[in-house]
Image 1 (spheres, helix red, strand yellow):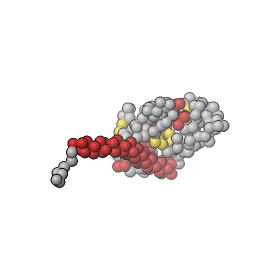
Image 2: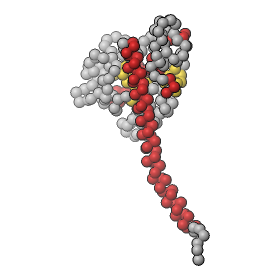
Image 3: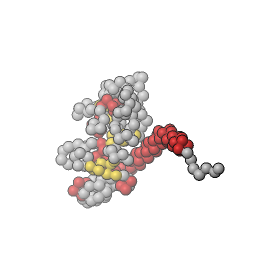
Image 4: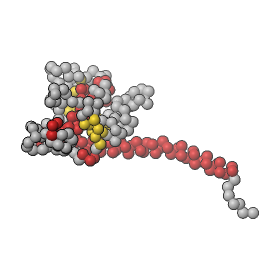
Length: 239
């Protein structure tokens, strides 16, 4: 006699097999999605890198953290947005909308150095515009001080005291998102003494750093790593 359907046992077996296959596939799919997101984030940092090079071509240097009009300094994420997009009003940067003027509200408008439509903007805790990554976290920027001795005490990464030689990378640009120790270790200073020792290799001695929290949205060591040695951050240097 011809069967018209599946028995209950057969259906349960089929569901069990499908559930098992789905459980096996989920980690693979999650890893693929995470890698795809990292690739897009890396691509965004490349666009920002090109914008910084264009800024340097116009201004003869990369943007640096200088005292603002009210006498206070801006952090790396705010500086990055101001230099590459400058979305403020003429009262803020001499030009309404994207772009800025060097002096006053007359003369040449510089920028924007990246297409503002490519990035989502938000405000920092102090109300200044910042560029966000694809997970909604601020992208941080650190210019390098060239011509310094990275093998000298505090010569690679440190908190600049205001006197004496500056380190190559100043922690102040990222102090709101990264501890000094986390920044040093990510850049190759494994014993976190602020300098590159004979048995250490710096992760970057380039003109600037770009730093995103990565797919997990957390800066520094991965909170899921019990040894605190693995990081999910996306940067323009190899960690």
